[in-house]
Image (cartoon, rainbow, N blue to C red; front, top):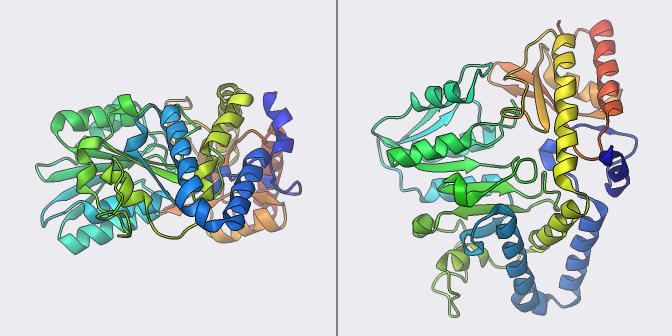
Length: 390
C-alpha cells in the first residue's frame, strides 16, 4: 500500500492508535517544518513580515488554494476556523422577523448554536429539517430537505460531510435546486477539502467554508471562506480594522475587510502551497482512494460487531474517509476515556440528540492493523464491561 510509506511523514505519537483525524487533522513533517520557518521569519523581522513579505506570501497562498478549489483567488479569504466563517455570515445576513434559515437535524453543534443565536436575536426561525436515517438515496435526501422550504426561506445551510454522522450530502443537487428557487446556499465544508474533489466554480454554492487544517493537513487555525462575487458586499468582517476605509485600498474591498485584521500570526495560512505540493508528491488521489477502500471494507464488520446498521448505503456517494457507527452505550464519555486510557486508541464517541456514534477516520498513516486493534478493544469492552450494549 502507498499509505505504508507515509507513516513516517506524520508526527502522530507512535504509542497511540490514531483514528480521529477528522477532529483536528494532523500536520506532516514537511508542512510543519515550513510553518515553523514562517514563524521564525516573522519573529526575526516582525514589521517587514507583517506589512510586506508576509502579505506577498498570503497572496501566493490564496492563489494556490484558488487553483486547487477551482475558483478566483479574489473570492477567497482566510479565517481561523469554520465556526468563525459561520458567525461572520450569520451576523451580516440581515435576518428579519419571520425569515427562515433551513438546515438538517444532523449539523455540527457549534453551527447550530450560532444560527440559533442570530435567528433568536432577529426574530427569525432556524428550521432543523428532520432527515430520516438510514439515508436511502441522494434523491430522497434532497426531497426530504426541501420539504422544509417555505416562502420565508432566506438561506439553506448544511454540511458537505457531517461531523457526528460522517455522511456526505449531495450538496451539488441541493445548491442547484436552491439556485433555481432563488434561495441563497451556504455549505459548511469543514471536512471536504482534500477528502473529496472540490470545484467551486461548478458547485453553485453561494457561500462555502472549508477547513484546510483537517484533510489538507495544514497547521491548525487555517480555514477559507468563499463568497460569490455578487454577494460579497453583504458581509461585514467580524472585526472591523484597518481594511475599512483603507488609506491604501486594494482592488478588492472583500479582501481589505476580511484579510486586514490587525496583529496576528497568519503563518498557518501560508502553508497551503506546501500542503498541495505534499499531496501532489504522494499522488493523493490514489492515497485517498486507498483510505476510502479501507473505510468501506471494514464498515459492515463494525456494524455487525455492535449490532447496528449503517447510516447510509456503503458507497462513496455517502461514505468517504470517515465512518460513524451507531453505538448503544449508557456512558459515551466514559467509553471514550476507556478506549484512550486502557487501549491507547484516539477515537471520538459522540452524542447527537438522543443517539451516540463511534466514528473512525482513516488517513494516510492508518492501516488495517489500526482497525483490528479497535475491533479487539471493542470485543473486550463488550465482554468485560457494561459500556457497550449489543
